Amino acid sequence: MTATIDFGVDHQAKPRGVRCSRDAATRRLVAATEAGLPLCVQPYAELAARLGLSEKEVLARFSRLLEEGSIRRIAAVPNHYALGYVANGMSVWDVPDECASECGRLIGALPFVSHCYLRPRRPPRWPFNLFAMVHAKDRAGVEAQVQSIEDLLGDRQRSHAVLFSKRILKKTGMRLGGGS
Image 1 (cartoon, rainbow, N blue to C red):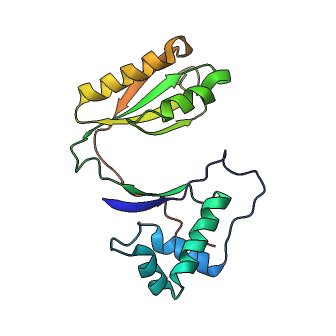
Image 2 (image 1 turned 180 degrees about the vertical axis):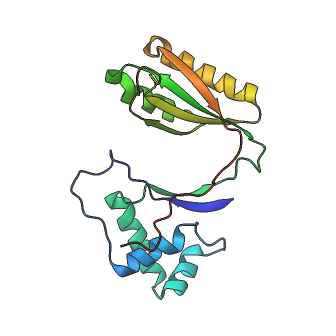
């Protein structure tokens, strides 16, 4: 298991126009944690020592990044493959645009959904606008979870499909790469 930091922006959490902290020490902190927090008893103290900051300063910078929406959360992320959850399915849903956000919130709250998001349709070949990734121990488990989503959405969903993973091509979070 790794402890990771989600550097995605939650657009619901902060108003537009809020500036993010981008001083050199914060950039170094972000770069130092892109692959996760140090796996030790005191990860913030370890980061502080590596960066020449105090532990209090590291915590204050993380708090500021969370507050301004530059990071969403700091959390442990288990390796679902190592835990036996080897079936992965991206369920894709065609729901009316006027209720897509509400449907996404409902689906995103399900314990077996790891991420859920809206994307533009590409008619006529791709009518889907709502995506939800589910993980299970086998394909039948994914199909049962997708059925649960279908039951939850009821008449709000017009059609859906499941795209099953065949192999892992990349398994990391976003890397900012020493940026500015």
